[in-house]
Image 1 (cartoon, helix red, strand yellow):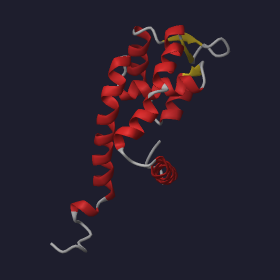
Image 2 (cartoon, one colour):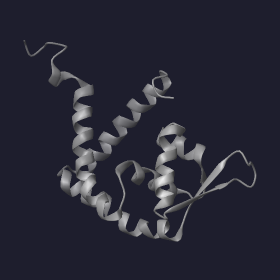
Image 3 (cartoon, one colour):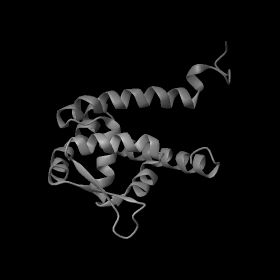
Length: 149
């Protein structure tokens, strides 16, 4: 195969993203473990540290997850004492998700995660910010194309 083969594995964006995803999650895993969080649970907590309480629908939209994927994460975090789910006062059909005191306090430990990730990846913060910007554009394009709902 030649270097200009459009189907060469190392030329595929999907392959590079899949490998990078596994590598980055492997960096997060040992950092999150002492906090008792998986990476998906950490993402839920990030959404709640940003704004609490939030509806399940708002969290799902922020994380681009469907309800069947999000519900078990919320149940595990509630069982761990990091959040509570209650019926919304304004609309009984909606669940409101709110941090507990323990969940709010965990934020202090989590503040150490981003710099540790940057250090372990060995990439300049400017490069990571550029990557995040490009990935954001890709995600928006996929949403606009109907690939993500």
